[in-house]
Picture 1: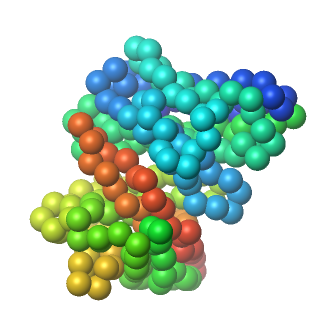
Picture 2 (picture 1 turned 120 degrees about the vertical axis):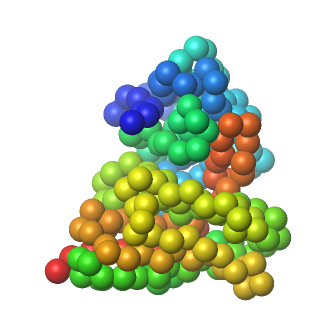
Length: 108
Length: 121
């Protein structure tokens, strides 16, 4: 089955830049999306179509794509950014949604 | 503002049935695809199913195919998930989400707060 691979955890100090990667063979052909989920809350879309930012999402959140890897970058990390981050895409047929395993961002 | 409110979760025995509902407001429900996504305790998100705006098209994850049925009532701004033959592994928080089709795929721009389903004897 199709899988998206994320690192389990990333740690940064406040004000630094956090980079969370997501890898899969079909990513060059399919868009990736990123969601932020804080404990006990529903996920929130933070990046769509690889690099677009929904209204209301701070400018410090950005996305990029290179080959089989997409990256969520959070510049000037703040304590409130501590959360789980999930990438999402679809399989090569475009039919079935797949989520990555999630990355826990810890702000030291 | 967009609001999605799920209901219908609870405790069910293995092999039992449950029907989840999601009531939408703040947008023209009949114009949008909708989906159900679940998350087992401490686990990753897992997409379950989606339905097109007119109900003409439905897709299911292999893990629920043949057991779950997604439906909607556009007159009532409501989305449903009928869950039959439930298994312990169906235990999860179930979210409804507004779904945006894109080139070769789709994503979820608004989510409800979720409803917990526990399958246990």
